[in-house]
Image (cartoon, rainbow, N blue to C red; front, side):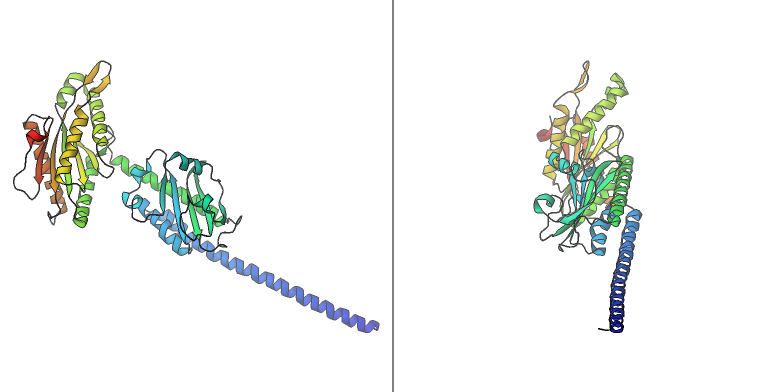
Length: 391
């Protein structure tokens, strides 16, 4: 081969190599450009959900955004939120409609020691990878999940919970591929959840009696129409109790208001201990308490009233070693059955409460320390059972 032919071949080879390099560079550039566009779209989706989270006006709205809008926007197949609740305080803050909704697989409140230990030892950084049933089932318990992203929620160095995303696609959340987007989302999510819970605490404190730590009249007056509206939908009976501590004025006059406050606190605790989680107890004023008993018929309500009377007077109230008081309480009971209905919910609530209040007045007149049954609202006369239910 002549030197001229060799030069030509070398030049052609160099040109081919140059074209190949250009093609590789072009491919790499297009890949980078595609990734940039993808990240831009991803950023917009994250910014959209973050803005919604920060704009949420209630805990219900916040959870709805996470459970529905986030899942839809990022095309997830599963999504769960687990919150630390060692002191069982969140159960008072998070509405029952969220906590106890049918087929609820989104929210879990962790309070058992084994659950709290698992949360404690969960990595504090975001983890992604293949779903392993033995390792991840307590976080997401749903068939066919292939990959998972685990976002710890941390505030002031404390793990308040964990948010988990699951996918049927094994390659959706690859191991060691946690993005800055997820890291930022977990921080914003933790802040928003903490703020929403603090707002609920503030609302609850405004509807809690500072002395007895049960609900106050404001809460009761708000809740009664809600329960009556639910009664209209469910067609289940609903009952009301009106309670009054007997001879409470003499306690204050004899021992002072400090002792009277102790009596109120301990009586409230004893009444609360006789009620279900769905029942509503409120200090209505002074030494009076009111109770809403959802899904409770008249006979059952009378039994609840009787249990309360027994709980209050069975053991003396201990103030200190020198003051042990025998306290009794009187009760009035009224019930709205399924066939009772009225257009004005507020009027119905007033009637239910005033009927129980009148029965309480009768219990006082008949000697106190007893329950009187006002019967059903549909009746024009009260059915009284002073002998059967008195002590």
